[in-house]
Amino acid sequence: MIQQELRFHSPDEILAHQAFAEARAVWIEGMLGLYENNPFLSRLLAATQRSAVFFNTLVLDAAHDPTDRSTWPTIALVQEVMAPYGVSSRRNIETIVARFVETGFLSRHEVAADRRVRLLVPTEKMVAHDLDWVRVYYSPLAVMFPGCGYAPPMRRDPIFRTAVRRASRPGLGDAVKLLANNPAITFIMNRDAGMMVLIKLVQTGAAAGPAALDFSDLAKRFGISRTHVRRLLRDAEQEGLLGLSKASVTLEPRLVAAFDRFLADCMAGFHALFHFAMSSPEMASSTAIGCKGPTGSS
Image (tube, rainbow, N blue to C red; front, side):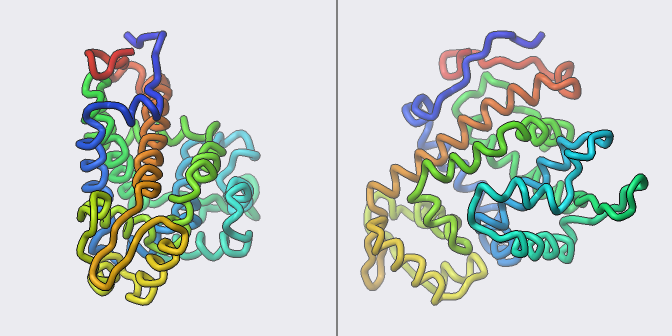
């Protein structure tokens, strides 16, 4: 039986949770599991505009109504939802989509009723990556709020994946607000593999003090050049986000706080989406929802 009165966990509540540090470590491990030592995926997805096109296309596909032309996941609709990001031209979005088609993540399907229209359809390869990605983003919530029943995303349930992507459609603009509200993280994310470099630095202890720095090693892990890593970190130093020496890097408290706030914002959003997804017709009868217990009460 679905509980009708739900209290969503706010970012502040998540940040203050006694298990936040453990949850953050789980998320970091999951993200590195997806992209570290996978140069192809890191170069393809670990930048704001490409990842936004990737995941917005998944949402548009899951939410579209075949009888409503305005919802069809076409390149024009992708360009429309990407416009508020302000980070990419319409031509660049066409190039990104073409790259996803070329690499086997997207296909173009004709519409029988109008053969001039091509729908962007995620392939099995794209869906498989999304299942992994959704699991990573629910893994810290499963640590902090075990009573909420996050089994579907944790077992990579394909029905849940579709439901949570469909539930994301009304709030696509929230991602733009998330970036706007986290300027330090957006500064990093707008660079190729920038967020992955930051995640790795947090894992190696740079958030707590000086951590060993090897430009070549970071470049190799994420499929970018040594020069790119050096420029990224030096630019971040000029922004007051970190400190560099010849052999070490230290993340400034401002950047550490921004990192934690960004993750808490994401977790709060996915916590809310979980309840919307589980209330969908596809999922409503599969698992009762509602957080239980002292660490996850509703």
